[in-house]
Amino acid sequence: MPKERFKITPASYLILINNKNEILLSLRQNTGYRDGQYVVPSGHVEEGESFAACMIREAKEEANIDIKSDDLKLAHVLHREEGDNEEADNLKRQRMDIFFSADKWTGEIKNNEPNKCAHLKWFLLDSPPTNIFPYVKFAIEQSQSGIVFSEYGFEN
Image (cartoon, rainbow, N blue to C red):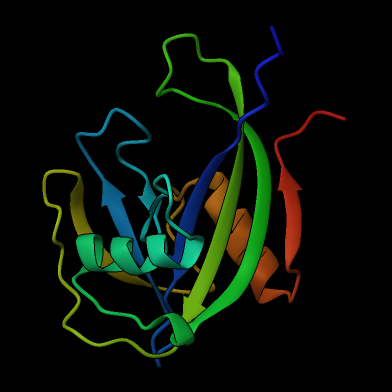
């Protein structure tokens, strides 16, 4: 019997910055994963879905905004390994995170998931809250420095 192939979890993230140089963050609650911490709008890619389609879907589901695929720009690619509190065994898992940015969107930003998100809030890009997901803060910093790809959490 052939060995099962290695699997990686794909996710899309949105770095949304307004004209005041503020970034949109959401405060997680009631999820069991990093509750009480801030993250950019994001979500796991579903089977048969592209990274861009995932980001468009998640932006609408989480923040009530519509983004066209042509308005998504690749901001950063993060290959990471991290313990996963979602799994009972808490084994290290590999993730492929694609961070997009967008300059244009339509719709009024609104918390569409109050059961999972305490609030959406704009923060100055250069002074995010201390309780932001560490790897998200890292990816935002890399993106702002013009670095398109990085790795995070691997022990060398």
